[in-house]
Length: 118
Image (cartoon, rainbow, N blue to C red; front, side):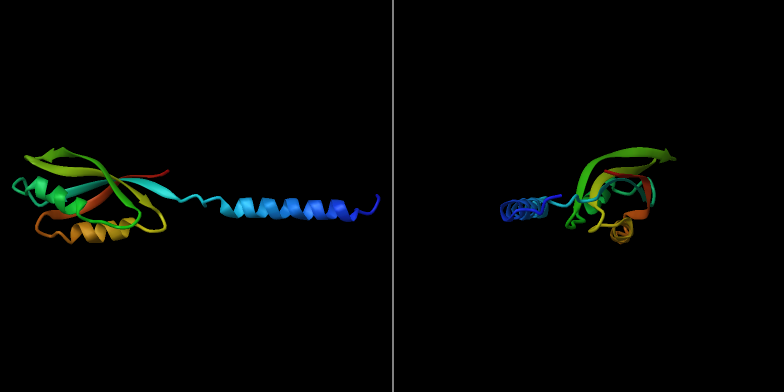
């Protein structure tokens, strides 16, 4: 195999540098998850509109609230089922549970109904 000429060597190094800079500019993929939460009230007299307002008031970088609905549990009690999308590095279910259950006047408990990586 013939030794590489100066011109070929320079070209190869130039292309490698171009490739590296192009690769460095690509944004890294952000790991996200879609979470469906069940938020249970204390009883059938709990103001569910206020409960949802409290939950949606939780704001964090990497947290986006989605659709919600009230689902009958029994005895006239309905739970709030609410969707959110989170960036895995920034928001965790522990943080969400801690903040949601902090609304003690409205929230009895919170469960993760579904957790899907996006």
